Length: 358
Ligand code: NDP
Image (tube, rainbow, N blue to C red; front, side, top):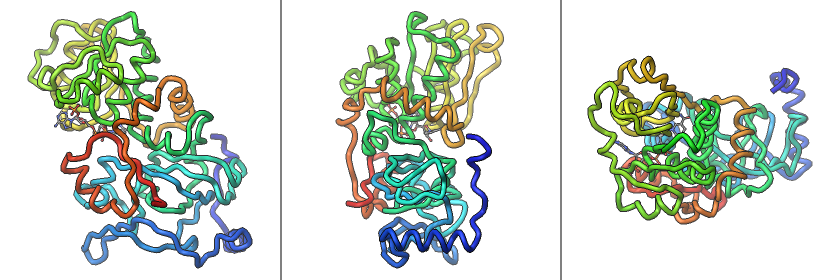
């Protein structure tokens, strides 16, 4: 983004102008709407649905009429307080959102624009998507690409967008379908599922690594040619093993990623984005110095806007969203306190779209 797009702090006059504009447009400062508010008053961690007004929202440049958000593992940690996700209280949860611009002090957006936000500290340092209205920094907005509905973007969500970042990283590393198999770990999860669907559509031969062999048919329906048990990679590997993979998308980390690296062929590459199996990486330098293997870190939260736009527009072409329908369910805002517990206990299958207006 250019420097001319950086917002200057709002003056009291600007805030007053915005308030008058909102009232003129009917978004009264006293009209209430629902949001999931996380608080930690006197050390008592709570997450509950509260009534807010537009006047309560942060002083950011773009007011969004939120349609959908999603439920991610990180959201579960934030809702329950079982992980240190929230950095300031009170906080509106939800790491992503999709909706329609109601009012904008950022000249790049106008009322009616369809927009989404992934990451950028939503629900950590900035109020997030579990709210029927939210104000967000225009710098953090991605336009909903033509070809996707608001609901599509949240069916894909942060997990799916991260998968596309992994695929772009592999492409940039020169990994092409003719070079051999690509393994996707944590295959039945959000990142894994979308990675399989995209890679298969692009012509790669995809091997899915999953602890849920009961999901083999589903993984094959997404495009996996082969499904292997999680234990095949989740083991103590030697520094170098027989080269098997041209590349990989790893959302597991730890021994799984170490084995994947040891089994990666000459000049292969692995995109690493997750830690579902642990944060450690018990590997050696051997894959790197003897085979030229590349380990590609992927971080969706502060990824540059140009890369985000590229990822979302590629998803329009390279992902058949209808393939996600079987594993996507829609839940209302009011269920979030329970859903936060459920995702941490591993009882949720697939992707959860949060309809904030249901
Ligand atoms: P999910 O919970 O949907 O999927 C994770 C998958 O990992 C599970 O479905 C399971 O797949 C596998 N898994 C779970 N526990 C273990 C374990 N103990 N050992 C090995 N495999 C395990 O999460 P997401 O797909 O949304 O996210 C995946 C990871 O990526 C998470 O760690 C998340 O924090 C991270 N992430 C990182 C981002 C970034 O910017 N770097 C952005 C988004 C997510 P199966 O049952 O098939 O084995």
